[in-house]
Length: 398
Ligand SMILES: [Zn+2]
Ligand SMILES: [Zn+2]
Image 1: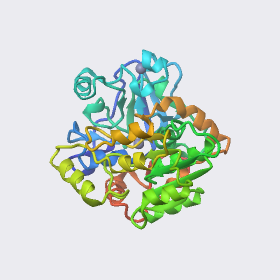
Image 2: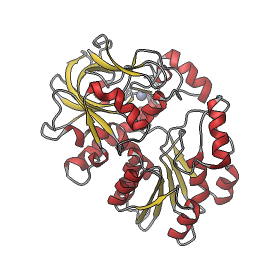
Image 3: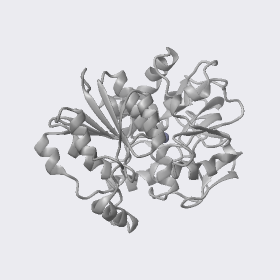
Image 4: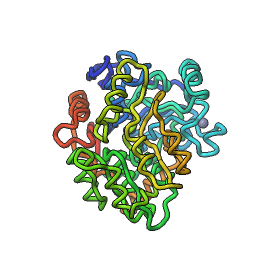
């Protein structure tokens, strides 16, 4: 079969790789009908996540049709049309039973777990197509993919709904939703969202769904700001204005009730300028410091006293100049972590099917599987107004 493979920093290729097969009784094989590139795939593309090997199959956002199931599968059957949660969770360990799906104890193989345990104390759930650090599972930017724990990870969708209205339920919509939900929003609240990429857009949509009165989007890319404005957000171009002063102004001098960092470790646009940002970039380049917490620092600085800083943006390692003093002095609450995808897939699908919400507005580019390597470069360089790329394969409903 054909698949998008990683071959080193900024070297994605479409190659012929062996077809996946059932390995465990709880596996299913999915014929992929559509797949997307995620902002977090760019961390792999740019070589920021260790544990990638040449030939690894990319992609954690995908949907399609089940073509084979292991004998242990009870809830999915051949012929089902499903989307697949991008984290892999067993559904039966202590963490899964407590709906902490991204903390699943059973899906990261021993070899990967040792590295994560050394880095973080404990290992979390594996992810599709996200390095050998996260389990080394092949991803879904391919014609076929093996889905472990298919009963837990697959969500059935009705035949008539187009792929693109469902595909973003695999990751970015639940991620933006959990980020907003973690802010514990009250009616009348003001929320600032740093980074208006796909997760930022989903956080904006979710903040409105959860009752925020005013949502402010901060970015420097015109297409993204326009998309946020179309959703009803107030936009702040961080290249043109003093973000902190503007946020104070828009919140009666108090600061936003909640700040969402939807930028993560590769910050540049969001006030990634100045001496501290340059120092961060230099340190990251020589591996002294893994992450550039530019947006996170700004979010902490901006947030009102007693407010919440919610961090869906991905961080992998260590950061310095973390403003713990500001966190303490202002009594801020921080909410972070990989999304508990399986908590949100079905309920959000119901909202989509009811016509309440639609995440597909962030999709700006539709390509074929063969065009995905070029699309990585376009997305990374934010060329051609690119916010979200999906690839449509044979059998996709449009
Ligand atoms: Zn993703
Ligand atoms: Zn589990």
